Length: 540
Image (cartoon, rainbow, N blue to C red; front, side):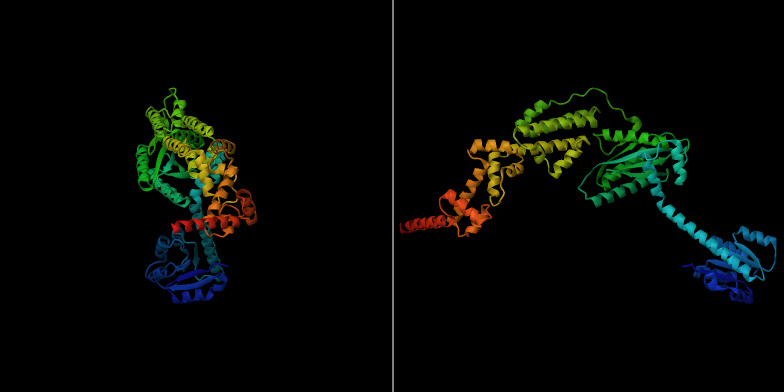
């Protein structure tokens, strides 16, 4: 469908206006509306009431010239294309009209072909401008994403870190950078959220963190881009001013204010890692050093770190005596172990000699100590610590001192709860008692539910009770069935289901084999005996 255009004709001579309207073929030229005005004032009133695409205006009018109107239109309605007409072939008029932005300049009387040609020219210009405006709007909307994609591609080495490759990409993507610009990267990392968040709420807060960084860190003094990264992190790429090589004076203060704002309003502990000035091709290297600095910051939250000021002691570190801790663990001294671990890590933090590698060593040694104790008692560690909370704490354990202590405490307490609460045999007996109504009550199933090795469980159960697990389960089922048959009016089929037999015939055969009577005979004999005892008691 072709676009339609609105035309305004302005001339102080009414017959000229009427003649132009008569000559115009509105359908052929796709003109939907034609407005008329006889003075500059009337023309301005039309503009204020209706949109006008093309203005056809006389230059010489008694109450204000067409040139004055043209200047006013270009200032207030720049999208309108103007064609001026006049009775005098004056070069001065033509020159001024073109300088003011008139699209064409026609002499009266205007031949129809020339008029149509001028209107077609105006329509073409409007179409080109419209396409350009649409492209510019789309480009403006998507430009931040294009810039963000550029930095991500560079950091992920999709774009080679070479001057020539970067220069080509900048040109192809029409990016606002030059090869001699310098940038300052700032890595922002959320260490932890202060409350539980679902995925939607976390995304909302991450968006708020980005907007807040734009306002508090970039502000008005520096231009730059914010590149979202994985795991609640983002990279701020500041564009440095020419000749600016160091860290801008207010930046550290702005980052600290941003950290305080995030802690107060966005429920998170966060840190900022400020890099060093670099050309675009040098940025991946600086970013790699920033991520190493972030990874090794396992001791501090809500702080600003400078890449150039990263000084860590190189003194050898003595690891704790895990054998001593193992003795404490066997004795159940869980609070002492957690206190010892916390004190040890606190000393390392004060001496500035703790990093991610050290936390990894402590994590592995501590885990080995706990798992060794569990193995001695036949407890499957992967079952005991297979719950979501244990898995989450284990994953985060080496991220920080805080997280490692939280994992140590959880691990020690959960392990000792399993070994101290009651004997293994008591646990198994309790489990069997609570699940007698289940058809499948096997040795392996019981072992899985109590986190124990099946063979280990069988040995200690037989040693302490004199029964195998399967014999004990059968004995308990028959014992409970006898109780229900003798003391309740439950249907025999219900009694069978209550002790784990869905097949009535199978229950009857098993019961008769071990009790010497069928369930029905057992009920009659025991209920008669119970009635007889009750009668004797009453007669007394």
